[in-house]
Length: 111
Image 1 (cartoon, rainbow, N blue to C red):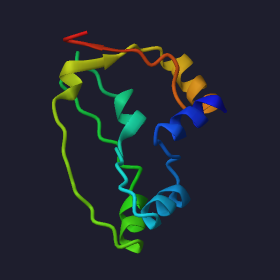
Image 2 (image 1 turned 90 degrees about the vertical axis):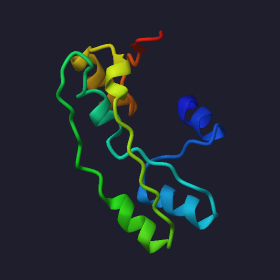
Image 3 (image 1 turned 180 degrees about the vertical axis):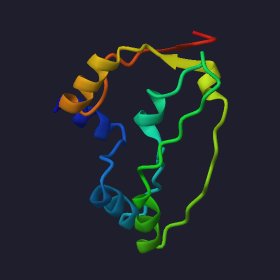
Image 4 (image 1 turned 180 degrees about the horizontal axis):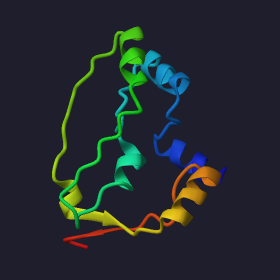
């Protein structure tokens, strides 16, 4: 619970239709990364293969319902700069229990 409280104090919100709708109704801007953790843990700088997770599409519908502007942005090449430690079993288990994967330890070219 304290992680959630800290995240919300810093401005983070749950990624649910209700939370996004509430933020949009209050006039706040919402930034989403549709691939999120699914793409982060499926992509590696050691391969030339890029994974695109297509499971999250409801955010477009929510934006249209609230008459919010969608500003598409594409980021490419970050998988060549940063990796995450690969402990798939532990990360899958902690993501199901905590809602986020542990350990999350990004490392890369400059760090």
